[in-house]
Length: 113
Image (cartoon, rainbow, N blue to C red; front, top):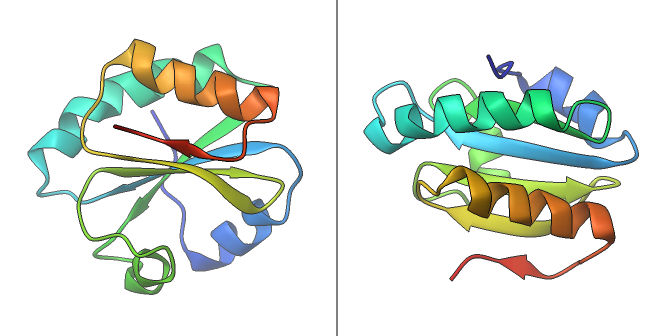
């Protein structure tokens, strides 16, 4: 299970060094539901190397607005508190793992096709 965080927890998390994947999601979003098991598996696989968290856009509209989230799911990748990548829409596990690998390798311009 990927932990869902609120604004105060996000502020603390964004200040941490390293890679964080933020899944902007909503309870009513079917593609978001499809991503849940993928992100949960990746959270376990990348434990200690990258953090994976979720933000419910209905509960935290300020965060959704801050990151310009218009569609769900949107996966925003932060490294050392700075956005280095973004994926919009449901994607396969291998694709998301590749995005995390690129962020961990130092890539700063990750975008999905």
